[in-house]
Image (spheres, rainbow, N blue to C red):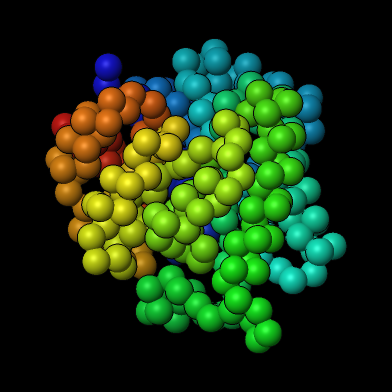
Length: 281
């Protein structure tokens, strides 16, 4: 069975980094576009919601259903890497809130982050450092992993009670390498904590495909980065024929969510991404 193709709301609005500028379609307009393009689903970033009360979420769920588009995931934005326990609990509450949103929407998955130190303020400098950064003075990466693991244990227990899967992304910081992702997964030991594999976030590693391969047994969703028009930040030079073969060998038939991060306008870049992925996956 072939993977199903979805798109992240990030592909439509890159927070002013792309040629679309600040032009942000509504979630409903994004869903309409998915239906028009024949996509199976859409992934919605939490920061793209203008409201998230249950009444609105129920209406949005109905809207997507009537257009034949599955809402396959919502994406939380949080950071458990902080020495202050009260701040970590505030960040945990952010993830819990999006688990509740997923439950109200009938969405199976919430994308989550492992966390980072934020000791390198500039994103350009952070990328120049390959997504690695030093710990805060007086602390170590082991401390950071302990904090993140503790929070994910709590969040995974809560998510399981709601029937929602947390999908941990390889997203710089603690999860910039496959071994960091698996350190959290294997320490939490919850069936409700899995992995969303971002194909573009291992580009600084000696063999990005080996990193991807290591995570495939745990993957519930794939983020397919594309760079039509040239990468906004970088171009990972991804070989989707190779990635497609890896997915087939792993018997992956879940959702592949497009994260278009190129300089083309989304009206051009998203259809190009669909053509690329349909031909390779």
